[in-house]
Image (tube, rainbow, N blue to C red; front, side, top):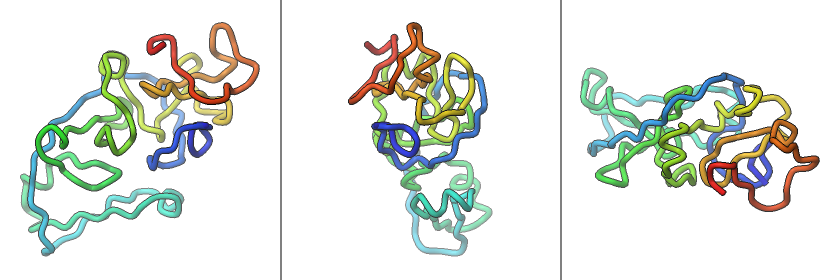
Length: 171
């Protein structure tokens, strides 16, 4: 299965699909460590009321709302952490630019991910038709998260396969 609407994927990345087309190159961003201490300002990360019901509520506490260093850091949408060193590297969605730790979204950084790009679940569309419709028939590759409708594959599949599925680049 693939998670909310995607049989087999179990990831806390939100349930919405926006249907935006195009796939740019994914960016793996270096995280910069910072110390977060309860302070003056909190910044709510949640952006969608429907999403709030189905996901965690993340908050970051800032020293000051004028601290440019902290305000301009990329932050993992899932855990709210800036991270440190190699574990702090973030993967940016090639469509919306939201950042995620690869381990927070259960994705392994491969040559396919770096060359083809990667989309978060919110931006997932079929690579063949460019649509996010019919999520029950939209397959996500177990390795790189590239998606195809079962009927957009060549040759098309009549049913959603049981167990895992890999795209033509990852088999």
